[in-house]
Length: 116
Image 1 (cartoon, rainbow, N blue to C red):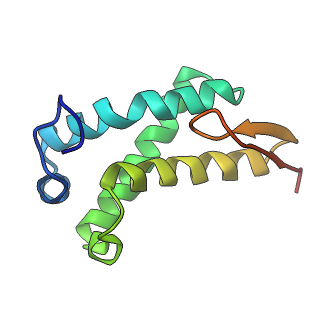
Image 2: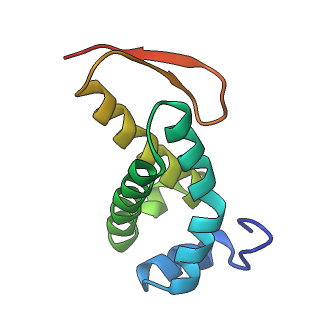
């Protein structure tokens, strides 16, 4: 199970995403948004930016679910997949801008990206 607020198994969550289930969206939001928001805030963004990037990541995730691409990633949890999409979207955004230090989502490792 994803967490205590979510009663869906990983398989049920994938099926729910494919069906655009409100319960599936709530599970992902409760489990992932605070991690994503903290990642953005730690790295110089705002809550509004975090919401925008989270919504973009959800859209990518829905496309992947619709195409049954989760079958290729059976060992990865849906929440991990979503957070990875979110992080890559942020890194691409940063790469388009100036040099910045970035903490990983758990406040550990530092990365630097340079202007293109």
